[in-house]
Image (cartoon, rainbow, N blue to C red; front, side):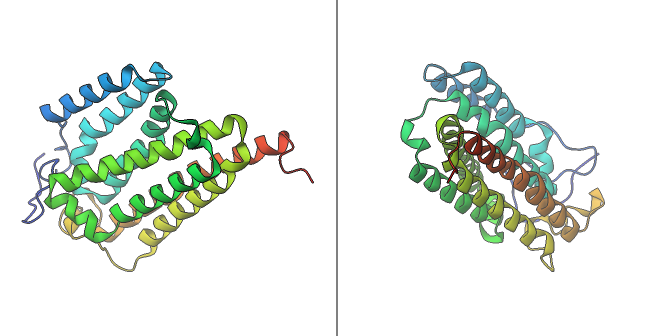
Length: 246
């Protein structure tokens, strides 16, 4: 039980880094109000309310569960939180929310994939990552931009899969490749590069470098495989429809 001392200037939104057994639920009333308001706003504009509600539930769980607290102590937990949002909440929200059909064009999907790559890399580099421990605004800009980019990308992929699976293939391959590259970069870095976790991982049985390597593997394997699976599914569908026939 208890907390690990986290010296200034690392004052994270989710509180002090917990020791084993000390991770707590995030009971921030402002977050609860924003989540409820967001659901109410989207409800009347939804294509599929069941998918919207499921995605909202996964997103809320990622933000209010002890994963929020644990992500202050462990970089790997922060990566895990992001993967829950990007690979589970975002596609469900994309299914639930209405979107313009241009989101499914080749150009629209390419733009979404590029935006997703930029925000993913930016928020997992040492400088921007550290900023989220010093500023609540930076913390929420990180989550909002990651979620928005992921929903944009998934919406395009899911819409295109219905009628033009061949345009899904390059975006799926590119996204799988860049997530794998980021994961490999984090896994094989010769030293720990995230100062907020310099003293918070040891109570959990990890050195900062080991924690970073675990986070890299999570980004590399589940993250890369998810979009590789999207690309493979698009390839199979396109071949069945003769889109790649000579």
